[in-house]
Amino acid sequence: MRKRAYAQRSQKRLFSWLLSLAGVSVVLAGVIEGAVFLHAQSGGAHAAGSRATDTHPVMMDRTAMQTSILPMEPMYNMAVKMGGSNTMPCLSSRTQPLCYSPQQIYRAYNILPLLRAGINGKGRVITIIDAFQDPTVRTDLHLFDRLFGLPDPRLNILAPFGLVPFNPNDPLQTGFAVEIALDVEWAHAIAPGATIDLVLANVQQETFQGELSALLQATTFAVQNDIGSAISQSFGASESCVGAAVIQQEHQIFALARRQHQTVFASAGDTGAAVLQCDAQGNPVAVARGVNYPASDPLVTGVGGTTLLASRTGQYIQETAWNEALQGDGATGGGLSQVFALPRFQRGTVGSATRAVSDISFDANPLTGVPVVSSEVIPGETVLIPIGGTSVGLPVMAGITALFDQIAGGRLGFLNSALYRIIHSNVYRTELHDIQVGNNTFVFLQTNNQVVTVPGFQAVTGWDIPTGVGTPNVANLARLLFAFIKGNDGAGL
Image 1: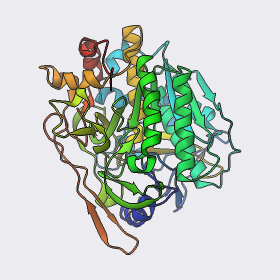
Image 2: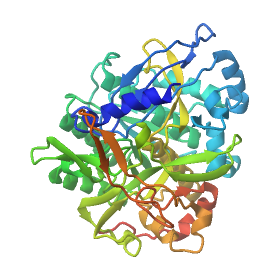
Image 3: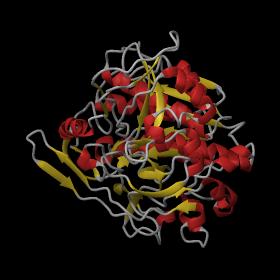
């Protein structure tokens, strides 16, 4: 695809997006050029000519999409047997844009030994919080499973507050539909035996406060009803825009989740160290350094993003902090809270007086993304698209937690204290990949074409803001994580 043209279009949108009520922290922006078209009824496929589509969900991490050409029948045949690596260009490419099948991710992050041992999340429930709906989520998930040789899971869709009718012409709704597809498919890919409970927020008003309120209401429902042992929240907004009253109220919900031994994840964001700043009335007025809530809550595990380099077979090679801001593809979030004091689990690690994000990280670069089946990107078409953004890490980390919970025979719950203990132990570099290269400085263009730079933070040896304690070496971590968990972890935060 024409990456430079894509980058220019995306970058010119960033300033207005950052200051927009309808685009707090995510843009699904891509050029569907020669996309993968899947035609389940006709059994055939065609490569599209040059097309463009922009979808724009709110308050999620910015998810940038790349595309590639793939005929359906060979894809079906090869994907079921070999994960599609022989037929989808980005799955077999040696240079960016790359994308990784579930099988490649299993190997890169050392998940495969657990799956081979029958540890697949059986008996566990993963809860995913999203908004609006994805009318084709079940059929798209089934196709994703056929492509990559996975069993269909038990998927429960909960809409406790009702849903507005789906409008395929509303870019906000279609953007969330793609996010739902990503979250469901990749939570399932990591923990194929787990049940997935998708809790959908009812957004009545497509405004910043309306969307945020609905999403946090859905999280509150999931916690108060004790739904799932791991909760994935692919959304976030800057602390100043959320407001102290809402943060205090939601913090009590996360305290309840801790007592119930639910593990809660939220994304650090996709605009590097930059976030919106809002006035006392909640109106966005500027872009500055900051962090997103709920990732900044000390009772939540904030997930940052990396650029993963793995071999064609999935062998791990290296990772760096994700930063493609100059190309218009975003950068991992992370920074220092203006609300929460430094929690006990970060003392002796973080050299600040306030809570720091990220805690852990996962592959997020859209140029090293993961494939997702969606029928909402282009009306009337089902496409296979590689997707990036820190929202990839949320369902993946929830899936990994489901594997750990199965091993433990119960819920592990709050994990932050254990993660920070590990980095001060002699097993740190066998349990986690320490990311030491990169930063999350964010560069964007204002609408007047003025270049603005928001200075970020550097990845260093050990914990750092862009990538936290690093990315998981899952099978190794599974053997020793339990020894670092204490019964009172998270109490009093």
